[in-house]
Length: 254
Image 1 (cartoon, rainbow, N blue to C red):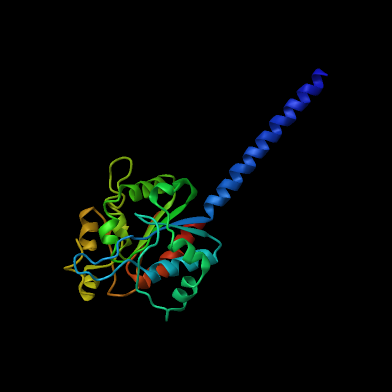
Image 2 (cartoon, rainbow, N blue to C red):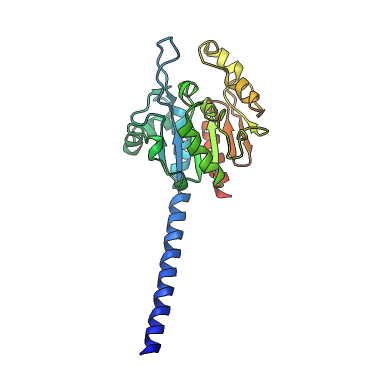
């Protein structure tokens, strides 16, 4: 009887360990197939009254790259709920495909609030651009908290165009700016002037990134340019959005 009890005990321990390991494996597999997108909640260009928001192609193109590779995407915004859209171009077939999908509509019309996000679920975070980010990304402590947690857990931080506005004030736990000394790319001063927004935005993103110690790099206006510095990936403009998505996918694969 004593031997039987010992055998039962050993089997129960083995079963519990196997179940625990299985759960860990399943949780890790779940986490590895999710990416968190961040979009703006801000819908006005300063005091001009002109509408803005997130730039559609800067979400749809990385979305398609990652979804086609089997990744699930969640979307968070500073305020949560329906996100304002800019650059609504249905002549772009990727825009049209993604915009008309039920999954995208469900997620972009009911974005998560920062407090609803569990950073441990995501191996990567992507800050989409659009001029709205210049007003509500830089000083949002909750969005910074999420990005810091993902990065310090070994995850990827990525952004495109005006999306790096979410990185300018992001400090790591040691108090240093994330982008200090790192290769960073974004919407350039020249591009901002070309779209006649240089005197509307609260600051020039290129200048602010340099102030934070970024090793800033760029190409000519509207050229595809992606800077990859370890687990930090940044792209210059809407034309670079797909390439940023591809860089995220490649980095996750490592």
